[in-house]
Length: 441
Image 1 (cartoon, rainbow, N blue to C red):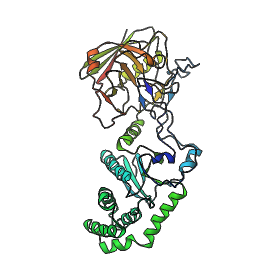
Image 2 (tube, helix red, strand yellow; image 1 turned 30 degrees about the vertical axis):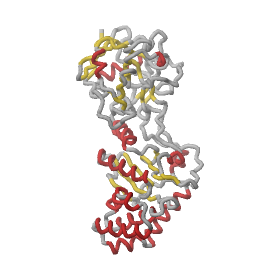
Image 3 (cartoon, helix red, strand yellow; image 1 turned 135 degrees about the vertical axis):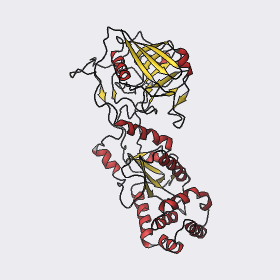
């Protein structure tokens, strides 16, 4: 099982041209990199792949318990961790939200989505639809911030459209005009300048605006100056792609609701994650089994405390604390494995800590029903997510900790619904773990 080494959320501004309207003559800024997510379990997508690029990662630290008497582990950083001075300098080209911005959603939202957008850009209209979905799903958690970026060289009506939204805003109808421009883009995008002005006049009347005032405001010096100023600033920083989208001040390339949804789920969960390593709760001289109760019945796992003491200790502790209760199998392929252990159900999170891998030569994935720990490409990134293989998968050997084997309940394992939270985040929730009971002898 692989945690894809880093969930790289942030990209160069140049990379944002993917699935976007772009002015080819604009040169992106010459920064070498923008802020990236920390390499943490909460910031790492955890998935299992049939083939791997991982190599064994030996470690010199073989302690099980630290000086504090707790299991040796590392605490993960939050998804939006503190930026380095270099990252702050790079992101400073995007001014913070101010009273000059049009915003929708609560000011104290945990996620702020900022869009640099062009009303005539087809991709921006797609982003509009995605952001509406997001606001509907998370009305208390998401704030949307609009910034105009009309690409006038390829969208001749875009600047006037931006001015029209501003003019409507002076009468308290910015978001209504914003919505009309995007949802009816096909009606006006191909019109001449004169025809578009007539269309806007009609639309202003439809929205209940004072059409005379609207038409005057739309071409007023103040509004034209504001929109032109935004265009000039975008050009000065090399921003020539729409939509350019930032989440909590960091540029992202996947602005679909399904791409931002896992970020929200992780951030919402972070406050409840562990902030210290778990206590040592097992005796490696004893035997342990775990009974996973699901709606379809029970599965029994024989645990290997001597071969994988860290993994078993973590699993036993979390199971006894009820961490796995209600957690779903977020990624299931019946010709590969069933993976679970993420409280968000996205595959991007965990319990809040990580620990080193425990590779034992005589424990392999050469047979089915082995139980392993998901990890990232960096050493020491095993966590709460675990998987059960349906079939032999030797390509996983030497890469993932094996801490048990399914010894009863194969029929229940076979009934787990196939799904992949990464490939289809909007799919119905996966099958749920009702509880995990640990038997110690």
